[in-house]
Length: 238
Image (cartoon, rainbow, N blue to C red; front, side, top):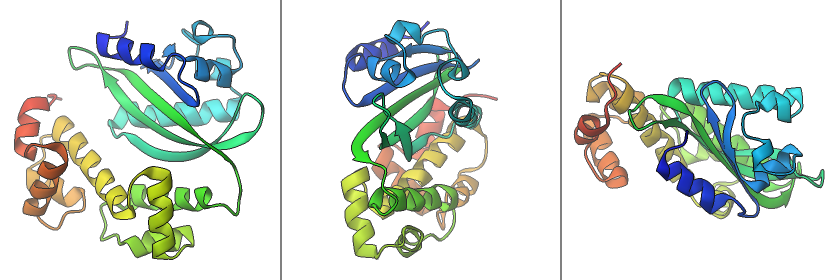
C-alpha cells in the first residue's frame, strides 16, 4: 500500500508526457507506475506493470541493471541523482534520460522500497554530443565527491573546457559542476545523519568537507537546519 503522499504524486504523474515514474517494493515488485513507464515497458497501461518485476517487463540485461540500482539505493539509502542514461523509447529510438531514484520509507520509518523518476531529455544518443560527456563528469562527481575534487577534474573527465562544462551542466542538469559536487556531499550527509551514530566531525570528513564548521554552514544553507537538529528530527535507530 502507498501512503497518501505517494498516491498524490502517482496521480499527478499518471499521464505526464516524457516522464517515467514508478514505485518498487523492497522485494522488487512494482507497486505503481504511470502511462509513460507502461509505454516504455511495452504494456497497455500502468495496471499491467503493478505486481510484476523488472525481469518480467524488460530484457534481462536491462532488468539486471535496474535491480542492481534498486539494491544499491534501498540498501544504502543513498539517492541516485541526475543519472544520465540511454533508454530505448517505445518507438525503438534511443534517447538520453535523466534519472533519479530514492529509497522510500513508510509512515513508521521502515524501508518499504524505491521511487524512481526518469525524464526524457528528447535528445537522441550521440557519441559526439555533450550528454555522454556530461554523464562521465557526473559519474566522477558521484564517485569522488569526498575527495578534494575540482571542477577541472570534471571537465577533464568530460573532455571539455571548464567553460563548456559549465554551460552544458547548467543546461542539462540545472546545476553548475560545483553545485553537483555539493549536492552529492549533502546527500551523503543526509544519509549518514539519519542512518548512523557517527560523530558530526567524522560525517563532515566522510562527505568531503575540510572541517565540521564548513559542513555545518553548507548543510544549513541547503537544508535549512543544522546537521545536529536534522539528526535529532530524522535519525532512524539501527
